Image (cartoon, rainbow, N blue to C red):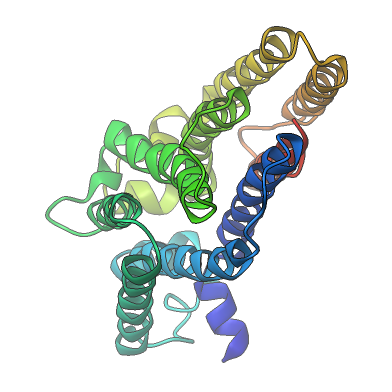
Length: 299
């Protein structure tokens, strides 16, 4: 049962949420140290509470998707616990609603009204993405918008604002934060396309107009081009934003050149007709996503 619950949370998304939380909080704390400001160590307690709330929101969004997509998942992802019958629909609903209520309660109790509104907006987008009659996932543009907003803009802006608020800092938007928010929003758009690339069979069977059903063949080129443009932006920011700090400039430029090289290498091996090749391509995209958050605190 524990293994089924673990799969129900979609671990690759959980890892992204944990890394984003740790990276953004660490970045705010390092900014305090750089500016010789006093660090309120209560931030750590609140950060843990915030992480639990984010994981609850994550579980709510991926869980409700599995409930409503159970027939599609029986074709595309038969290993998922609801599709495999390891978790019943009533239990899945209990997990989803419990996660949603707990997450909302924690954010309402421990964070500012603005953070609560951002959290509610993210939950709203995660809901209309899946449930009828909205079913945004059937529309390629709306699906990409929802994923990019939640995984890109809302998560990173919300985390920075929450950490700054807990420390009692005047809200500011340093270049590093603006960079990670914009970088990850673009990255999330690519993930929105890539996440269903192996699922074309089920998407077509159930008339789900995912981008994967429409753009499977050219994606290896177009998706890699978008990410390469993102890394080019990272290099440009290194030249522009860190002109007074040679170490930061060197770090940003070298790291993004290295990641762009890795992207070029594994995207060149993508075979659009091979599901195993597409799955490997998707896993490597998530690895790039994780690495960016590992780099972020020290930019």
